[in-house]
Amino acid sequence: MVYDVAVIGAGIVGTAIFNKLIRVGEKVVLIEKNNDVATGTTKANSGIVHAGFDAHTGTLKAKLNVRGAQLYPSLCEELHVPYMRNGALVIGDDINVVEELYERGYANGVQGLQILNRDAILKMLPSITDNITCGLYAGTSAIVSPYSMAIALADEGILNGGTLLLNFDTKHVSKESDGYHISDGKQMVIARSIVLACGGEHNSIASIFGATQYDIKYRRGEYYLLDVNACDVGGYTIFPLPSSTSKGVLVSPTCSGNIIVGPTSTLSDNNSTRTTIDGLQYVKESVSRMLTNVDLRKTIRVFAGVRTLVGDDFVIERDKNNPDIICVAGICSPGLTAAPAIAEEVVKLLNLDLNEKKMKRLPEIKTIRGQSAEDIDRLISIDSNYGKIVCRCECVSEAEIVQAIHTPTRPMSIDAIKRRVRAGMGRCQGGFCFSRVMEILAREYHVSIDDIVKENKNSRVIIGDIN
Image (tube, rainbow, N blue to C red; front, side):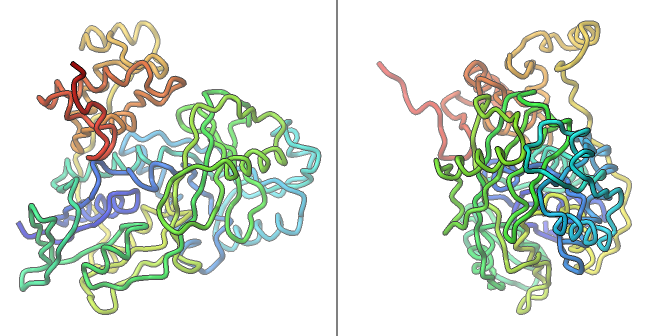
């Protein structure tokens, strides 16, 4: 088969582009070098659907932030992805910066912005520190699970005729009369047009295609993830006043009820996602200047992600030397928010119509978490595996894991299951369910348990027997 488009990179941006191209009727292949979608920057994202007051007016970031935020509610409803419009508070002690953010947001077309004094903030958030004197409320700010969104976009695209190739590490490309021939040394794909949505890997993949390389800067962001209901932030996402390099260390609920705290914004030489004592200490000190009730002793995990920057704005353009290649690079914050709008821009650059065909919708995986006893009994009567609890912390049954395994993206690792049904995301971080998930994966895929990996191909858990 010759595909109309090959999208390289299966993070939130790549999956959004893949999904949109399928929706407008193209034959599309999504190529990812790792074992699952959303294994890079996307899985280590704050999960904020930004309102759009931070990005400078007139930039692609501002335009696509606001448009993306508008697209999220209906898109999440179609994909069965939890979306919560919880509102955001930006707090600090400089009214001039607050007013600047308000004016910028107004110019960007953001609705529902309010400037607040200390008394107004205290009514919404009693735990602010004594130095907080003013703030901005953004009622349209929301939260979403970034990896759930990417997975659902990919799943729906595959369900409607798209192709996903995992563990495909692009090694060689040649342009022939019928399109680009893309090879990983084992298999080859042919596509007439290419979209490079490779994040931090852009330059290495662009060099293989002979496409434009950019001056990419890497910024590592370190986070704490706190236990469910670890502190009360009123349901809001809390930001400090932004700096020239970052929106700052935020405190926010997640759609699953945990609290996320971070990130730092540290220049890095590469894509390293290591955490550091200094970085985590910086997060701790930054939060203590905003709120009095964030107890980092309730941390269940620390982690880091790396955002990539190319100058001060997104890069979404036809390659100067290869007009059949679209380069999508430097998609840092608000990249998650902008992803659906970025997909629209790519469709326009490919000279395609934005009108969508009728799509098959994904079935929703029924969960037992938060259900009444009567509803759980009803599920068990349909499938007895709902009565077998695999993950105690997150109350995940075997039925949910089996359903996840048989979704279109076909998750094959322990972490891939974790991203879909939350088995292993609780307080014990997989201490109880880790081995059971491995057993279910091995059984459903008819492979040896030795072949099951934690994440990517070099992360085997079992490497031999002790005799």
